[in-house]
Image (cartoon, rainbow, N blue to C red; front, side):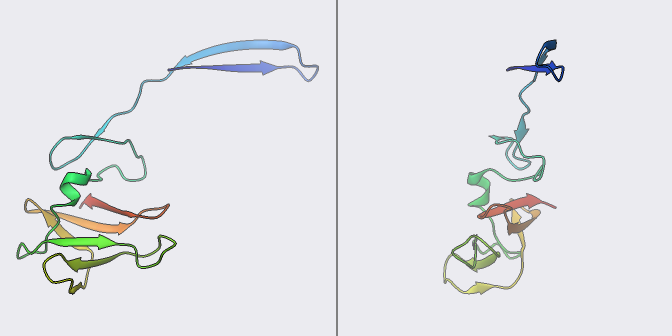
Length: 112
């Protein structure tokens, strides 16, 4: 992708045209190496397939969700019973992770 920056004098006369080529930034799930959307805010976030594998320390499957309809908060529950999970620490393939509220709603899980 190329971006063109234009600079001008106060009078509106074009002074400088500069082309800058931007390399697309890549990011991969730290668990399975699947390519994920780039996020400087969440550099260690998991792909959706790995997020589906979250479990507690004993291996019981978990799911995390926002506690309000506006996308705030983070709550976990056991997939098998719907019982509330107290905490945000989880494991994917034995790797410790944390679930948290995503900045614009939703849940993000990152490797600790």
